[in-house]
Image 1 (cartoon, rainbow, N blue to C red):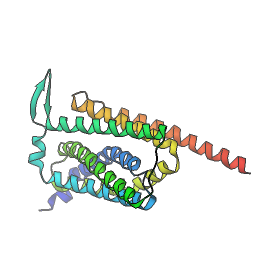
Image 2 (cartoon, rainbow, N blue to C red; image 1 turned 120 degrees about the horizontal axis):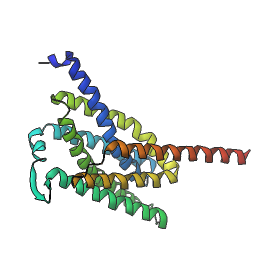
Image 3 (spheres, rainbow, N blue to C red; image 1 turned 45 degrees about the horizontal axis):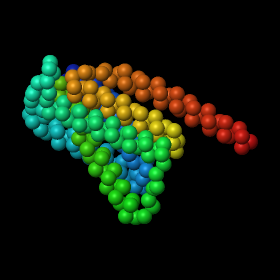
Image 4 (cartoon, rainbow, N blue to C red; image 1 turned 90 degrees about the horizontal axis):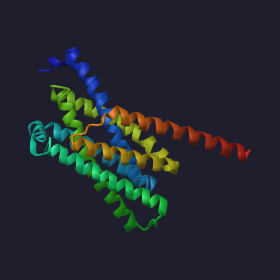
Amino acid sequence: MLAWVTDPQIWASLVTLTVMEIVLGIDNIVFISVIVSRLPAAMANRARQIGLALALVFRIILLSLLAWLIGLTAPLFALGDHAFSWRDAILIAGGLFLLVKATHEIHKGIEGDEEGDQKGDLRKSFAAVIAQIIVIDLVFSVDSIITAIGMAEHVEVMVAAVVIAMIVMYVASGPVANFIKEHPTTKMLALSFLLLIGVALIADGLGFHIPRGYIYFAMAFSAGVEIINVLAKGKRTKAKRT
C-alpha cells in the first residue's frame, strides 16, 4: 500500500510540487500580511493563524474532491476563441476582488482614515478580515490544487506537499507581516503587488497567461530595493541620534 514511499520518482515529484506550492503561496502570504496589518498585534497574529489554517483545510478538502475539481476546467461557454470554465470564472472574480481591495487600501493609506479603537469596532474588523481571507483562500486554493493535479499522481503526495508548503508559509508569514507593519512604506509596495496579482488572475481567467516567473521576479526586485531603502533609512536615523 505504501510502496510508493520507496519510489525516487515520487519523492522527486513531492519536492517539485512542494516548491511549486510554496511559490504559489507567496500571493497568499502577501494578501494575509497586508489585510491583518490594521489589527492590533494579538488579533493580527490570531487572524493570520486562522487564515493559514483555513488555507490548509480548503486545499485538503479540494484534494478529496478531485473529480469535481477537474470538472471545473470543463468549458462552460465560449467567447470568441476562448472557452470559459468555472476555474476561469473563479480566477476572474478573485482578481477583481484583489483589485478592489488593494485600491481601497491604497486610498485609505493616502487619504487617511479614522481607526476605531472600541471593542465592537475591533470585533467587526476581525470578522471582516477573516471573511476576506476565506474568500481569497478559496481562489488561491482552486488555482493551486488544479496545478498540483497535473504534477502528481498520488493524492498522498499532494497532501504532503500542501502541508509542508503551509508550514513554510506559516513560518514566513509572521516576519513578513511584522515587517510590513513596522515599515509603512512597504505596505504600499505590498498593495501594488496585490494589484499585479489581481491583474494576473484576471488575465489567466481570460486566457492570457502571464508567466508567474516574470511577476515574482518583479516582486522580488522591488522588495529588494525597498529593503535596501529601509536599511539605509535606519542607518541615517542611527547616525542622527549619535
